[in-house]
Length: 70
Image (cartoon, rainbow, N blue to C red; front, side):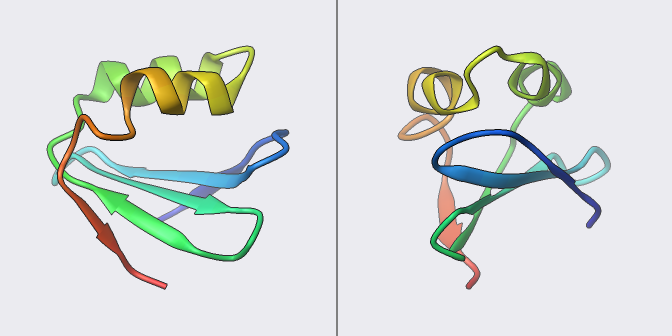
């Protein structure tokens, strides 16, 4: 899965696979989490957000099934 680097104090990069609707978020501490069944629109808004951290906390964290992958 290709990750896009972002400018954020807590998030290093964001990856998305539209065919499986999986979103991956790599944090600045090196941990990566995978979020399941994330609509493409949510990913697009996440990438465009002026604050990736605020968007993540308001719209992704605790809203989708999560698995830590590293």
